[in-house]
Image (cartoon, rainbow, N blue to C red; front, side, top):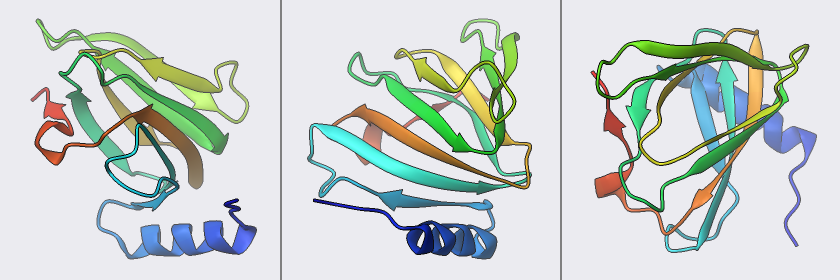
Length: 134
C-alpha cells in the first residue's frame, strides 16, 4: 500500500518553491518501466508548462486538479493557433482533462498553488517525453 500524507504534499510544494519552474513532481509509480505512470505535481502561481504534445499513439495523458486552479490552452498543431482556452479546478465546472496523443496543450497555474494528479500510459521513454510546439 502507498499513502501520501499532508506532510508529503507540503514537502512537494516546498520543493516547488525552490524550483525555477515553480513546480515539483512526486512519483507514485515504482519505475519508468511501469505500464501506468502516476504522479502528483505541485505547482505555484505562475508555473507554466510550455505548449507541447505527445507524438506516440500510446501517449494519452489525464490530469485531475485536486487543489487550486489551472489555465489550460489547447493549440492546433498545424496552425499553432489557440483552439481552446479554459480553466480547471477549484470553482470551475471542469475538474479533470484527458488529452489524446498529438493534442498540443499548455498549462499555467493561476492560483497561489495547485495540486494535480497526472496519469498516463507507460513505460516512460525520455526520448519521447514531449514534443514542443514552438
